[in-house]
Image (tube, rainbow, N blue to C red; front, side, top):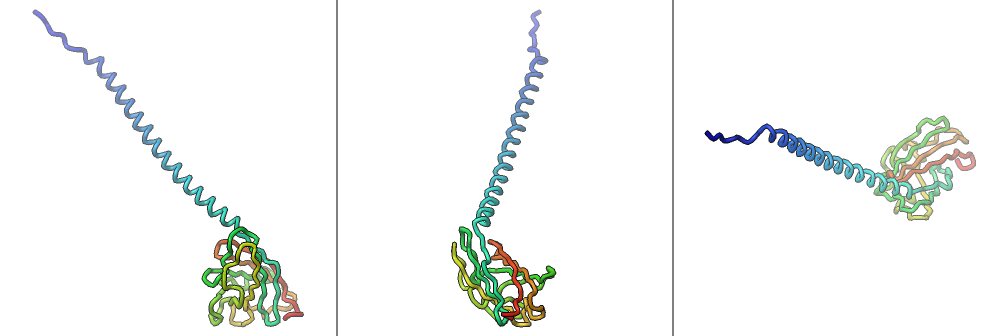
Amino acid sequence: MITKSRPNKKGLTPVIAVILLLMMTVAAAGAAFFWFVRIQSEMQGGTESYSEQLSESISSRADVSEVDVMSDESLKLIIRNIGNSEIPVSSTTKINWLLKDSEQNIICNQLWNATDSLIVGDTYCQSGCDTNLPVKGTREIILNISNASHGCFMGGYSNNTMFYFKIDFAGVTATGGSFSKDPASA
């Protein structure tokens, strides 16, 4: 009698197992590769955005070259743009003004109001806040803080009191300085 021999299936099972393991490894490596590429591109985009913001803020610089308390206790500031981009000083921007006394107590922390002198509590920009400050430009800005209803009123302080201030130009740049309430001008 002739017997048919069956093919040996025991030798085929390990080959299929190795092929399946290789396919799973390639699939896992491919998925990990695309995941890393996506994470890397997101991080690169965030870094590019941060570096753009940093270069803009570095290129914007303001300097207060002179501060005078005028006879009506309004404040005259001479501001120079020493950066490479315009500084927002127009009435449409939000400029924050922080004023401290000699003991570093905050007198006021408020926005300049460049459009309406009747808003109680705001520092009113009397002149110089009509347009942005151009590159390498200089501007005289007069802040009307002489009214007792304004939060930055200095009338209760004695002569020769030192004041410290910081101006934030809508987050583009900031500057600051100090001045004293001079008895000759008050």
